[in-house]
Image (cartoon, rainbow, N blue to C red; front, side):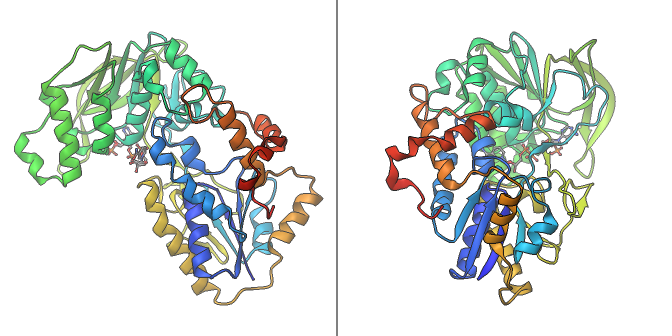
Length: 446
Ligand code: NAP
């Protein structure tokens, strides 16, 4: 029997488990380890709460989790509760699928002022990630500046601009729902350091902004390049730029101005005690498509600054790390003998959820090529012994199913669930008898 440990239970982790099941045709035991008591990583705490159809992919991961060869080991922190060398001694292969949950720093003066937060923190806050439950973003009547022209910037802007009724059917957590329905931003400005044709926003997500009840989306027509130049864009990008042209052509007078400031490179954030304004330099496109400063500066009021400029994978002790790229040092997913990485931890924070699927196959093939025969490692029995010896308190998939049912039971009207946002609440729910209400769904093997 081959023993594989996958660290991280998000899309990259579950696609890897699925690929390994196929690759080794049942002769494999897989432990999916997560530092949280709840699985599914980015699906639960990254995908926007009003994008429930995207979250539905978790059902596919659940089907993998419910097979006998796969086990979920929640609330076990790799690097502190157990180390990488320990896991390498227990498993034939250890695959890091830890994603990129840390914000990249802007690296300008004032980026550490109160009121400047990263998208991992803001998204984690409205999605109920325990690390960000106490974030307390200042929204009431404030000017919000969002930095970056990717889909995460759109998620943040949309959630901030929504009217209370527009959260219907979402699983936004109570603390964020209360704040966002009681407090309204005075303005939202999305800063892009390059131009409309350089955005990394997809048409569906960009189009959603135009349908919001309160957001008056504004694009300065002077920022738009000649229409004919759109012909050189790939179809998706052409559609996105077309939407920006439509916003520029038909300004609305809804309650919250939501402005796109293009060619605006952040220079510094100013404020006496906390962020009050951001100074930007007007840019133009260089020959290589990069932003080039023009020397012209202006200030944008900013009580809250949310940086949406990409993420980093936090290092883990004993794992070679590529500091510049902010991810594990690897060659096509190989880090060192027996140690692999997939998903954002391998290639950085790009692509859709489905992009992680081929990653899983790539790593399962690498494992098969590197280790044609299974070894004689202890696998999950060895991990269980270590967990027992250290008195660690893990949460199994059965425990997650109890949390899941409890969250569904306590949902506010119209919402699919009300997430627990504290680890101790999750652990308590994992121990309760709620699951007996639907015993058919409970995984018997754990
Ligand atoms: P992203 O798509 O890489 O966008 C990052 C943005 O930040 C870019 O516009 C980039 O500008 C800008 N930026 C980077 N450094 C900057 C700096 N120092 N100053 C100013 N701007 C800076 O990243 P993301 O939005 O975090 O999204 C991550 C991935 O998740 C993407 O693949 C995205 O499509 C995906 N995602 C998808 C959805 C969805 O499908 N609904 C939702 C959320 C996220 P430059 O282009 O000039 O570098």
